[in-house]
Image (cartoon, rainbow, N blue to C red):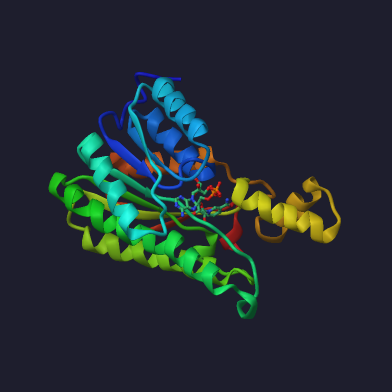
Length: 267
Ligand code: NAD
């Protein structure tokens, strides 16, 4: 897996929140494939996470570290950022990816779910960003990549908290990009359409159960409603976009909310 030509990020450290699963894991793998050391974060079985860490470390010839900070807790986020800096010197690439979803009408939306979604999907990125920026600015190089969503650009019913958090992170992306515009630090957002991860599988399961239809039919329904390509976006494709955003070619890509969504927001 390791290739000598794929070493554009060798010596850099990437911290990817929510990287024990789905999109975050795909992005962590793509950055590791370019030689970046990886700080993993996210929930999961300790043995499975340790196995993941050593698989990425040996597969790509990089160093890995794990911190289990709960991204809804500012003090745990601060501890993770300090631990990452102790381990690797500093965080050069910050990918704010951890996120959760809850689906309900506004009048039925559990207040604690609203608070958790805003904390994990939005406020956590403010905390990691404010803590990562001083070292990035001092080094005059850094990349902050916020994983927003097509729901950062357009809305869907029953997803008020998610849509608000994702529109919010697009705004945070632009403000961060402006504050760093004259430096070697860039900040951009990636806005995926449907990606078949555990977060979306839950919605497929709910649709299959509600409609009395098969898993495959539920997937097809879900895609046909929003995503003209009729195909899921993959974590690997998103990982390659993140790699591009880390490249020198992207030095002047600042404050964009780049949709990779099978045509979702073109409609
Ligand atoms: P996922 O459920 O597969 O992964 C979520 C990750 O976040 C996991 O590693 C989980 O442990 C971690 N996490 C959740 N709560 C956490 C917390 N409190 N503290 C620390 N880690 C926490 O989901 P995914 O689909 O890979 O989603 C990743 C990001 O991509 C999210 O921000 C999501 O909103 C966004 N996104 C997903 C899709 C999609 O279709 N799957 C589309 C657009 C955007």
